[in-house]
Length: 175
Image 1 (cartoon, rainbow, N blue to C red):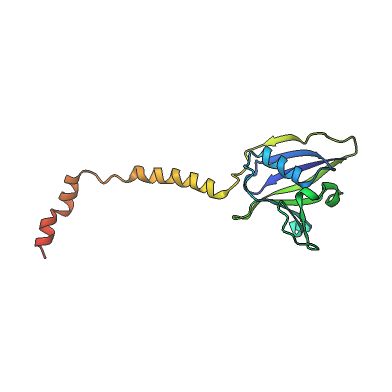
Image 2: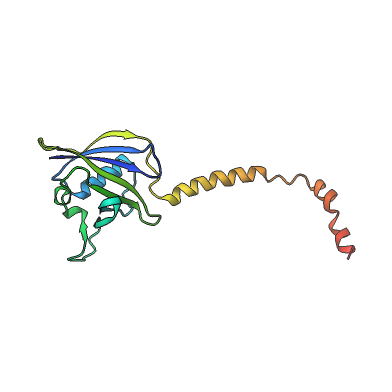
């Protein structure tokens, strides 16, 4: 079986990725495919959350094995897509920035009952992916704002200052 996923972002309405992946693959394979098609660095933590109605969380599928047996947490590398997903319309939340609670919405849109895929395929790309870490994006914007503000900070010549405020000696003597 082949699963087709539609990935969207609340941050950028123009962002869309459509991925086709074999149902026998693991959630880690889907994770790496998302990371690659969004050009994200692989040094950040991420998790999938199986979503119920209105994206209510039912189960977490994390990249790191936390050693919690019997909990509602699965490990990406050990969990096959078909173990969790079986019907079109099922939804996932993919959290890619834990510190700022940023995520993608993922929906299983189609299931193709044909032979297996050897390689994951990104079949549609629209818009730019949001910055992987919001802090980096804010720093970039802050630099632009700082440069703009510095452009307006012109205090004029020192002669203008003395005309407005007088000499420092006059201020001290005036006491």
